[in-house]
Image 1: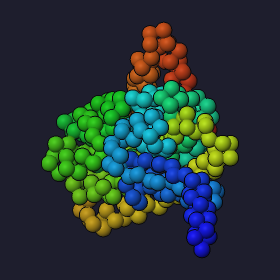
Image 2: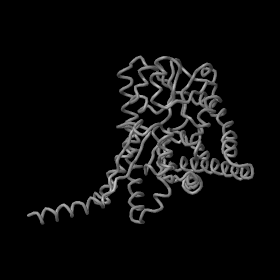
Image 3: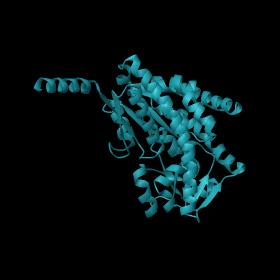
Image 4: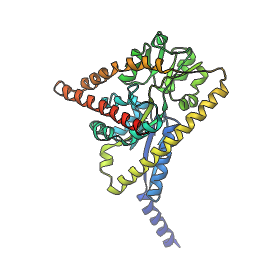
Length: 347
């Protein structure tokens, strides 16, 4: 009997030794889009590996701020990280091309196709992640970025004296300067209190997230400017991934593809549902959809940010590499614009 028990224990230890736990950190919370992404990724990895690979998901704040979890992935402490592109500019300056207003547009089918299939993103931009030991696996839209404020904003003049919470990268900051506002970079966990205390006047995020974070409780107006989607990224530690077997790499890619689709379908549904919830909870909420004429004023201002983007990228490199970096940034942006145009025409 003892011998049989020892044999069972040895067998259990043998199988236990084969099991792996991979860490996946998100900048968001449970039921947010990045969580749905991570959950589907974990589900597929478990199935494809016959239970030998488990993915543990960490939510906002459990391992630190957005910048903290990017650092952890780059160092290999965790294997996967999901953050908005606006938080990656200090690591990969070229990624800010997708943060420029009126580049990707807000047609969800077009955005999804470009973000998951773009030759520019995966052949030209993705290699830039390698210099910080990250490997870009995918990008996704979490829905149109909506402005929140306590007054209607229809023009750059309306942004005057408005302190707007933005992300920490240069392009989001420069965008709202260009629009006439005072940008205030904050981690999302600080936003509700800042809106409540009126140390900031407004914010910008997709509707589903505004509802989940309860920011609609401390804002009176929501504006749809047709500006851009919230783009989040999924990356892995580059060195770690390169050392995986071909079989495991194939599993990861299959799981990423499934997660792309799950998150896409979810964000369309949850943005619509949460808009209904906001209006039910706050029937006095004023919803403003900018007209084409109003949008065109912001779109014209946004074109000035293209040169800013080129400068930001160039300035991130040594003097002898600036010219090549600037040219590379121009190629990335112009190719991306062409892809969006082609995808839009194909609809």
